[in-house]
Amino acid sequence: MKYGIVIFPSKTLQDLANSYRKRYDPHYALIPPHLTLKAAFETEVDAHSITEKLEAIAKKYEPFVLNIRKVSSFQPINNTIHLKAEKTPQLEGLYEDLYASLPGDKPEHPFVPHITIAQKLSNDEHSDVYGQLRMLGIEHEETIDRFHLVYQLENGSWTVYETYRLGKDPQ
Image (tube, one colour):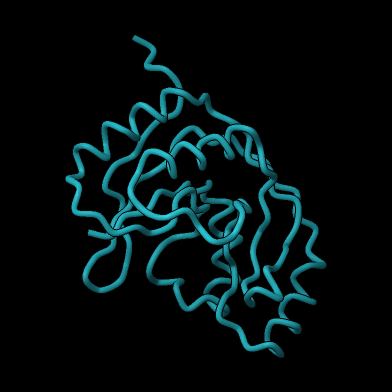
């Protein structure tokens, strides 16, 4: 089965991202706006053993503030435009722990926390759209207190398998 680990931001931030994704992201209908902590990975390992590892990782981290301050791009690597999140020790730690604990290869590019708003654009489209979007004044801050194990359905869409709350259990 194919899994991934993501953070779904607040409805406010999802609505902002979707206002652009509808037009510029062919994956719009497959998954809501998200910040990827661990990219899609295939495994035959049962979900129960993955769940145990994720529960342990979630307990290590307290809720943290996610800051989005600008629109950015991955060009020249690819024509993806995204809302860039500030890299925090918590985000980086979660990312490292997830890659160290779960199946799947290390990614070929360094970790850049982001929420994709446009992808698979032609060079001309990218230039035009990015030129407009980077002028947006984005000042968004929210508290993140959970992450999600998602899996891919046969139709290519993604759905939540389980949600993990950050921090130690209050009991």
